[in-house]
Length: 443
Ligand SMILES: [Zn+2]
Image (cartoon, rainbow, N blue to C red; front, top):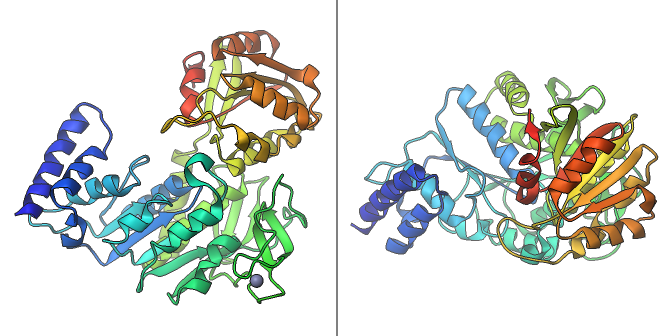
């Protein structure tokens, strides 16, 4: 009876929330109040795929979703922002019958890396994709190793782990558990470096024995081909591999045969596509169907946003998540390696859209040193935290004659309408993008 009530209340409140344009975690929250173990009482399909990690969860899940649909199977997944237990409960209950049977062929879950342990105490994914662990939202998450401990608590017997072999933190999970593991990774290529180029190194110590680790090469930060001479922990040979990557032309080749285009010419995008490829193939979907679905998806969902100031100065918005070094670094590296001159706008006004924090220590983890590049003609910064950011830029050795500060985004945009040199890029987070988009015309 409690189960029936929880399902019906969840379905009803979801309809009401949808009508008022509200989020999707409240219905699940209510259902969990009525029946705390509701998730263990639902008859779920055999094919359950879950994705977690610090970056790229949403786009990976979206790609897997479009592949599954293209393969002719029915699938339900949770949208961005509802990746904690309440959101997942809403997802499951709103897709099941009143008797408690899930009605789609595949259940696909984007799981928050800290909340996965709660979600998977009731639901056991058949394939559990863990893509990466970076420093992210430190006020909430602390250190990546702390998050790793939480992810470990979400792993149970019988799940097949789909792990990024290039990320030692992620791959160290294979040492803790006897689960079957499927590996994915990117092979050596022309873009690797021998040293760690970021301000800090989360790959310095072996995550298994805590002795010093050595790298043959790195794709970025702590991600690459590593080995611990002390305990033997090392990068495992991948089952799904990007054997060829061209970031100029924008394509990857998976398992030496399957060419897929990149929406963004970055290695991060490549990892998400590879993870989606691996998960889809494990579900028994034919490689040709996967490749064609991924190429279609990437054409339709290139996420780079274009805008114009005063209808005449074009700009490109690159979402850079505050409190997330890797996200910033990839965009800073991108703009500073361009062949043309660049004017850069950075807005840090609200650090998070989910909670209040005024902690700016994360600015010191970001490699703003990239902006010393001669093609960066002007750096305009805006928002409450301009002073913190300006100090960081000065310590990064940037010529402060090129830096202009404005408290209000509106004033920064007015300045840019007169003084943009070369190509204009804006770097900011979801929490602040609205402040920019209000002042410009979206393309
Ligand atoms: Zn070791």
